[in-house]
Length: 502
Image (cartoon, rainbow, N blue to C red; front, top):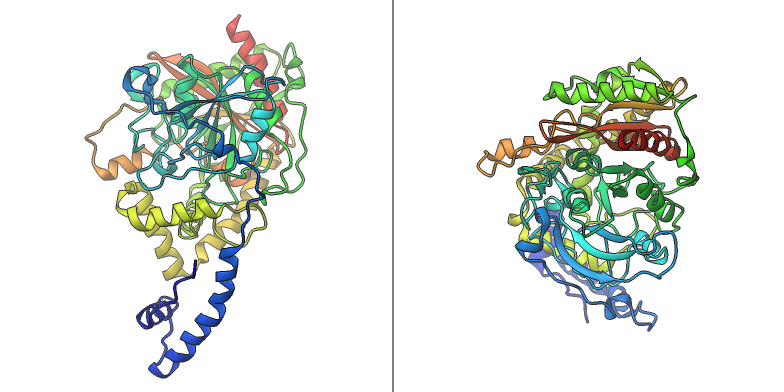
């Protein structure tokens, strides 16, 4: 094809968008320059990047949308079967993928009515899961474009809580959590930019790990900002989470988020019989946060006592920066996400694997269906654009610089303890309220991230583990560890889990 040449009117619009003007006398020069340089784009468009081999997309059945009777808690967007290698550590395990992870030949919607994209390549972690013997059996529900932690904004409908259908599963990886209690999947993969693995894990009573930043490659997954995108495993047991992490962790040359990637012995770490020698810091500022429910705090304190009985030394520690992390989170989040959206879903200036098809689908979807975006996304894009245009990125830059200070404040605590402990969320699962006002809908989607979001900014591993039940609903405790020491968190959680089951 030949790339369209801009009209004279478009030339003036392009200039105005970049804060300058062109005179009528300059129009001919710009037309000539565009025509000359766009010949190079014509040549680029003509390059065939396919190596001639059949892609997985050409060999796969995309599955189907399950009907209401077989869609447990509305956790599933699509049921299918992509068989794994038939051998390996995940042999026979049934795996569900969040709806923003590329599975070749299977439509991806990101929980929205804005985009629908069918990848022709698997995400790196998908290839690893299949090679390890896992079978991909589902695409699971998520909040609309991942902009809520509640679980009620998906274009496919809200994901209900498995323990109480009047409540929500949490988000944005709500389907990844609820599906684990359906009997149809053993392991799921979630995504986490502010708590989106750990929140639904806590509310649904499953195990969810946000790994150390960069431990698990993000290639082939639609994200928000290269500096705080995380993906990780969720399961009913700590062992299944550890087994999955062992498969998907490790260096991928196509992912610019990764530098040195030390990989621990995640499964071997589960051999402890007790917690003797382990030091756990009960984070003072992680309790009594805004909107907290006293029974949640109490359940986590009781879990701390059980950890102590299992041999751990538990002491209260303080990190005042934890309670003041909100400005850093918002300063990075709003403009970072806006830049990614305005950069057609992948942004610019990084060396790795780009997906031209996804960029086209995402960019065209936002352009053509922008009114179908959720209110949270619209507000974030307005806020991010406002802060960039009126304050020239000053606050994004400042917040990014402050991340190292926040990270160091936690690292100092790890001089004396092996893990931090706090409630995953301040409250139990939200009630589903489809009649709440738009403002309340937005705020209710963000009012549970006080303990989770800071660790997206610092990159420390954070694991949510069920620690109790109150009023018939699960309560999750969150363990946070040193960067690239995910195995210690898994070890502590496994001892706790085994003792709780006995």
